[in-house]
Length: 100
Image (tube, rainbow, N blue to C red; front, side, top):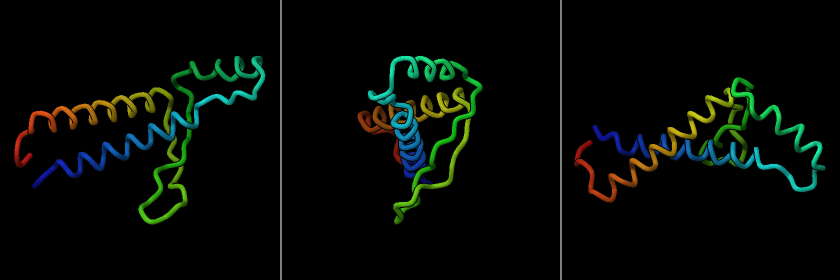
C-alpha cells in the first residue's frame, strides 16, 4: 500500500489550515496603534484557544467546520505541516524509496 498520496493529502490539508490561520491573524492597517498594542498582548498566551474555519470540502465554496486549538497546538500543526512539505520536497529531489 502506498502511503505517499495520503501523506501528500494530509500535508496539503495542514498547509491550507496554516495558510488560513496566518491570513486571519494578519493585522489591519486601519486600526489605531493603541488597539493594535492591546490586540498583540493576548497573542502571547500560548494556552489561549483560537478557532478557525476548517478546510472547505471538495466541490463546495462553503467553509468547513470550525476547528479550535490552543495557540501552542496551532504552532505545532504549522511546524508539522512545514516539516512534511520539506520532507516531500527532499524525497522528490532524491527520488525517494519506491513503494513507500
